[in-house]
Each structure stands twice: as C-alpha cells, then as structure tokens.
Picture 1: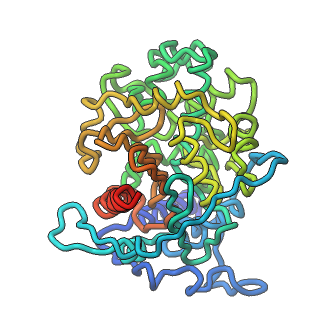
Picture 2: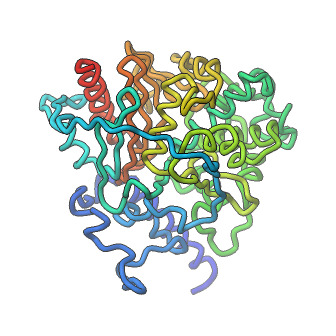
Picture 3: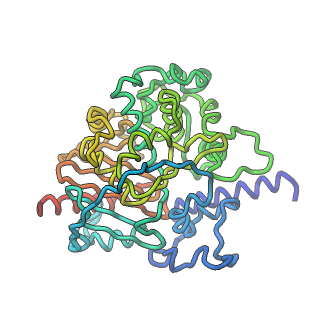
Length: 439
C-alpha cells in the first residue's frame, strides 16, 4: 500500500470513529441496555481479547459503543496533568435520598406522551447522576462501569470551568474583558483573533472561521483535533502540533461580536489567556483557586497536548460528586466548604447572560431565549437556571430558585446535545420543580 493510500485509510478510520459517535440516522446503534459497557465486557481479561480491546491509536476509543467504556477511563488514552485536591478533608455531602424522584412524570419537548425520570435516564445512555437539593444528595445513580469514585470525561463542561477562572480574573481586575486578545497574546496578531476581545472569545462571538461539522472532511475541527493530539495524526501530517499553534492559523469570518458560533478553539484561546495573565498553568490555577478548597474527593486531571497545554475545550476528568460540588459552589455564589472560592461578582456576571439575539440560531433551536456568557449557558427563565454542557450528555444544571444542582455524565451515541435536549432539559426542570414543591 502506498503512502497516499495509508493516509486515506487512517483518515477514513478517524472519520468513521467520529461519525459513529455522532450516531448517523442511517446506522442504527444499540440501545442503552444493549450497549452497557460492563455487559459488553470491554477491556476485560489479562490481556483483553482482540474483540474487547479499545485503543487510542486506531480511533476505537471514540467509536460507539466502545466510548461507553472510554468515557469512564479517558485518562488511559492520552497524557494528562493533575489538578491537586489539596490536603484538606473531603467536604461531606449529606444524604437525604428521595427514591420517588425516579417516578416523576414529565413530557419531553414535542411529545404528546409522558415518561418517567428513571426511564428517561436509562434510555438516554446515562453513566451517572447526582442531584443535590439544598446541598444534600437526594438522588444518585450509576450505570455501566462508572462508579462514585471513578473519573469521567467532562467534555465541554470543561469550558465552563475555564470560563469561571477567566471570570474570576476579570472580577479581580487582573483581566480586562474589553481588551483585544492580542493585548495578552500578541502571538495571535496575524490570526483571525486580531480584532476580537477577550469577552468575544468567552462568549463564542469571536468571528473566526471554524466549523465543528464532523460530517465535513475539510471542516477545521479535523486539523484542530489532530493538532491537539485528541486523535492520531495520519502519516506525513505536517500541520500544527499543539492547540496554541493551531490558534495562530485560524482566519476571520465575521466581525467580532456580530455572530455566535460554538467553536472549541475559542476555549483554548481562553485557556491561553488565563495562563498568560495568571502566570500559572490552568491545572495549577484551578487547584489553587477551586479544587484545593472545594473538599473534592479526588484530584481531577486535564488532558494536555504535546506542548503541555491543557485542553481547555474539553479535557477535564473528575468524579460525579465533585462535579456536583462545583455546581453547588456556583449555586451558592462562589462560597462553599466555608470559604469563598470564586468572587460573587464573577458568578453574577455569568448569570447576567450574553447577547440573546446573536445566540438565536437554528443550531440552538432547543434553547430559545437562552444566551451564552463566559462559557456558561444561561436559560433566562423564571428560576434563573444556568448550565455547563458537554457533548454526549455531560451537564451541570444549576437552578438557584429551586436550590437544586444536577450533575450528570453520559455516553450518548450522538455527540450533539440536540439529540437528548428534548428529553433531558424537561427532565431537569421536572426534578427541580418537584423538589421545590416538596421543600
């Protein structure tokens, strides 16, 4: 086989992995019960048999149904850096379980039929869920190979964590949201970021040319994931070899602030700004400001590229309970475990939301009236709800009025949250409403 054929074969394999993860309508996939990773026996044996082996090098770690195992073992597939939990005691999450929550009935968007919370969680490839009401665990479940003590990839929930660090630096006067990106990162002067502000980057209104359409072989996402080492590079690859070098290559498409487009590269530029301003790695800053004070059960880890740059767009791995603790800290205005972790002004600014007019696009059809601010999703509803969201179903749902936080990990075959939002968003609200009524 000649070199061109090898390149074509490798690229086809990678494309197949990502397209499979996006659950093409023409290729039926196993349901949640049939694809349960424990039931399928992935990576069992010493060593596992070839048909149960999952590898990074061939892209199988991101194929469905293998990804249902991979998401709970992500750190096995790529290099990571540690986020130290500190040496303090674990912050207790008292339990006041309400098993009846699974029986709550609700109606998904666009459906005339009701379902129950338990049935919907089972059907939508859930890996774990922790529901807090007033800081107490009222509901907790685990599926497949995910356990209370195992870490799970948070995907783009990572963006909201990094956005919170940026908002903290802004609230402290150390980062100017109106300043040009190039004020902090002059290396981007010749890129599409030359005219964008820090706030444009944090609100996904940077105006750069960058497509995340996995079905398009020439979409910018392909160069991006190869540059960061998220997927293997084909033989002869000569493009950027880390996230920051990739950012230097992006082009301008629109005037900054004029359009909203969800583009993961913005998050890594935000991570670069946070590192430059703080003088610390993202992992060290997250540990210093949040993780070492949160009373987390475990260190977290963040995937890094070949230059040691943290994958701010989606590389955080943590336990479900620690995800819930982070969400509870946000609900409480930045104060948790007897300490102030994030300035209340930073969280108030996040909750204020972004430009709803530019956010109103066909891609956000399930999120009418929402906006995006500092890498958080703001509902602008009567409960003041805001969310961190990641592909395949990762979520922190914060409902301040109901005093509810829901942390959920999942491994849905469809990458886009639009596949599960019609079920999961009404589910979260139904749980919050029930808990608020019950007080």
